[in-house]
Length: 563
RNA sequence: CGGGGUGUAGCGCAGUGGUUUAGCGCGCCUGCCUUGGGAGCAGGAGGUCGGUGGUUCAAAUCCACUCACCCCGACCA
Image (cartoon, rainbow, N blue to C red; front, side, top):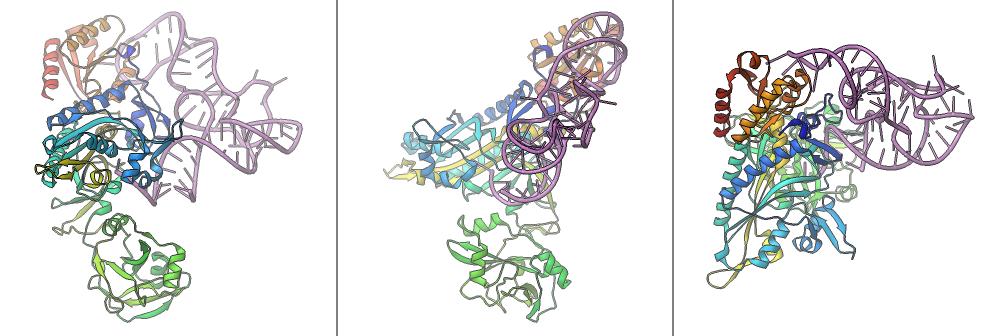
């Protein structure tokens, strides 16, 4: 490809809306342009990277026996009503009506469509297992799009779905995906690891996410520095730092207007871990108490996992009715007929401070079991710095990461709600056992940029680079002729090469070549004129070698075939 | 949805009631010249100052409303 025929609108200045490295460089290097919040156009260079990623994804999906589909974006509401997600997806679902007033949505994911296809067409156990996948645009009306394509409202996903006759089969399909994903991210040149994950809207089956650590990543991940434990922060388990309290006397103290942990702890001059946060929840109209130590936050995801999706925080009115006090002054002592669940940090501990169920008063010396009955001790807190690993007591690190993939065991959730069954050997009909797996293609692109960029711009991993080589002639006459020959030779070898044939000064060409991150640059300049040697520059290593044409060609050929 | 911020030329910015044509840098166009890290000279094009309504003799500038975008939080496959 010649630069003059391609469209690469690079920018000199930093676009002010871009804060993260990936966002800034995607705009500067001319990979994408924004149309609206969370809506991006992919320009030729960015699209080429995405296609390279898609090729890798396809190859590995095909290798595990996947077959490629192309499913519709427009989807009638009825199948979503069958699965229950017309409601549970909420505002994130883009909804529209056709001319006859029928409800449709733009598919945010395709479980319903796949399950519908399966119930129409899968008849016998003989047709299972199946691995169906597609690479396609998804639509989600994110409350807050972020970091350009990392959280967009329209994005490209490889989604696959497995169908098996039983749990063993599901495990096999799931493991096949784990292996395929490992290969895909490795081939894309990413530094990544998998973590235990939460299913969210998908359900409660086994689930893992593939994470690429990077400062601007919006997911928080907990990783043990001495064993293999890794989990998404929202569901991570950890041992809290332990403290002892000598204050065992249950006593009411006046705390006028002091509601929050910070206010109460500074007013009473005690550390926040002495406080007991009393949180009233409502689970299917039944009030329940959840107790979290003052120096921790409640982990909503864990609470949902344990109590089910129906659980929610009680309203101010419900709090007043149940506890006869306002939020900030409520506590578990003296309440009848309410189930009390305490975080494991309270197990066999004593001497806490919590609300007295009387406005402007707290109780000190509160001790579980002595002062109130705990129904169950459960891990319900959000881990934080200082906690230790529950498996090996090792030090935990908390890092930011971009989630590039997610694999998920659905089980029978959709096949039961939507009636997708298969006939067994003995003539019975059973629900298909399903799995669902996603990869965000733009996120692979963004995390590769984040991981390898330097002060000069992008450094693409060879495998997904839009071009492997850029040939830069340093004038627009005789050296351009020589460069054109080199370019043609490399093309004949099947190497993707970009020729910077613009009439620009060397500085401009070098800066742009660095910015768009082509792994190898061949400079045709004075040295070529004098000694017939070209310069081969390694973008990532920042190393230059001078080679004859033949040697350069051989070197490039070797590097590109190695991949 | 809460908090904060920004909208003036393609990009980055200045101008915050009154020099009758709204500036600067970069980019862009034309010509000359130049070619190893964003060259130089000369000439030129490009803006209903996000939008609507108001106040005023006079509005980019003041007021109200509104829209868009960014960041933090809430939320989030």
